[in-house]
Amino acid sequence: MKTMKSLFSVGVAAILLTSCNSESKKQEAALKAKQTTIDSMQAVIAKQAIIDSMNNVMAQKEQELEKQNEENSKQVVANNNSRQAQAAAPAKKKWNHKAKGAVVGAGTGAVTGAIINKNRAEGALIGSVIGAGVGVGTGAIVDAQKKKKEKNN
Image (cartoon, rainbow, N blue to C red; front, top):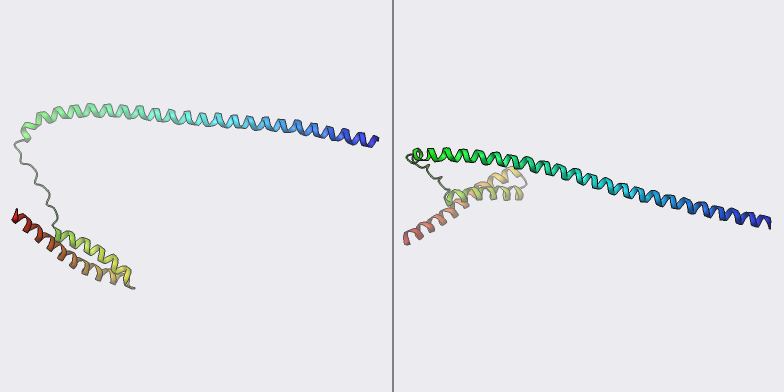
């Protein structure tokens, strides 16, 4: 019987010790979670402080730009009278449809030729020549149609 009582008392003691130990682990885990939360909040606060300082710098730069723009606009108004006498810059000449067709056709033909032919360089060369020719022809047709349309209107 005594061995039974001693085994029972050892078992009860073990259960008490493990229950106390698990409580300390739970408390330790809760403290770690709290510390993690505090650390993340501090990181967010630090990021917000950086963002605020950057916004302040940007606001100052914008104010400086506004001052410079005001000064430049005053100078422009004063110089406008002298500039009106100067001729306007000529407009850029646009590409006609023949030129556009040649470039697009050459590019498309080069890619297609390189894909189809086993010798990639040869295929690209042949494809670009053929594609440019087809592109020029298509562009010439479109240019002719536009000229007809302009004459009729």
